[in-house]
Image (tube, rainbow, N blue to C red; front, side, top):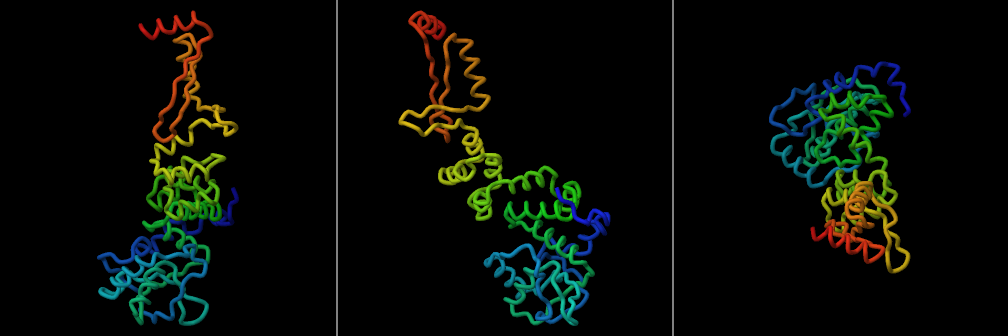
Length: 295
């Protein structure tokens, strides 16, 4: 895993110190506790971060925020840094508030000015996105991966700063190993992260994902589907080629107890229904089997 030069500077000020400079603005748009601003500036003097990781903004949510701002004003100031051009400010955190303020036809906005390097600014932007409740799992995973792989932060550091468990961070990052077509289904909200995780490592991930969606399977059902035996499509009579270890072990146990060959064939992947086939070699073996079953 590639490490950036960020490691060489001891992670700079550290994520916790970095986020303390923008709290409480990162994780909220309009709460009931107004924060103090450094100054009020013309809205046209503020512009977005061109490297902002998030490119899409939900129109309905943005309109709702605009209505709140129109009624109450901007309660939480927008966090900015001085731009290279005098009198201009670049948004560090709070682009949604700035966009909503434009819709609300505000002429001025309250800002908090911070001194951030380009790297620190991007780190804050990533974390701001991760902490949004409406962020899809793939975008969240990409944010984690960028902080870990590009900037050298550990999953433990992210866990402490973001208030998320290490297992959550690790599980989300695993989603990035899925094919792009499957990741797109998660981004579009057609497939949940839980469903998607059952497909990790499968060479038929997209086909299985479409089956999960079309049948409306639960996560449990998706797990059964991905663990089901692979079936040959040659000829009319499909034969089982591979089975999961639990099924093979059960077949062996039943064969040993009954004294005949036992085959378990799953016919309905969704419900778990199937056939139990007992195969005998001669009439004597059949008589012994019937005796055991009668007992």
